[in-house]
Amino acid sequence: MANEMRIGGTIDVQVAGAPLSAAGEFTIDVIGLERSTLIGTSGRAGYKEEVKPCFIEGEIYVTSETDIEALHSQTNTTCQVNGANGKRYILFNAWSCTSPEIATSEGKVKIRFEGMKGKII
Image 1: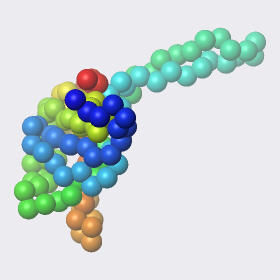
Image 2: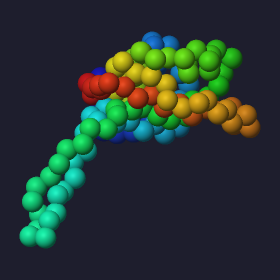
Image 3: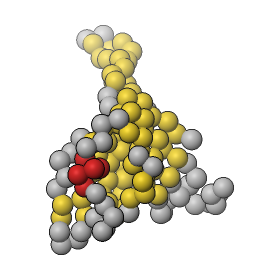
């Protein structure tokens, strides 16, 4: 169980069960639903819902064990980020979206996976 006062900090990142070395901030949306207010000439009328892709994205370090081609070839995988607050963010049936552009001076590559559904545990 995570420390109840701990909100942020270290994370663990996995794609297809393989651990990756997170280089910093990760952005996660496992809900995939956006609401917008509808406004007409008579004022607020309500809202609409729009489906958007669930995703996990961030930068990882390219270590000797990092297989960039295998990571990018994923098209039906599970991605998971374990937060310092004890929450697990899981993306199911996910595919790699970004072409891997490696920043050699820092040894990092940005990854983004989008998927059919997500879950927070």
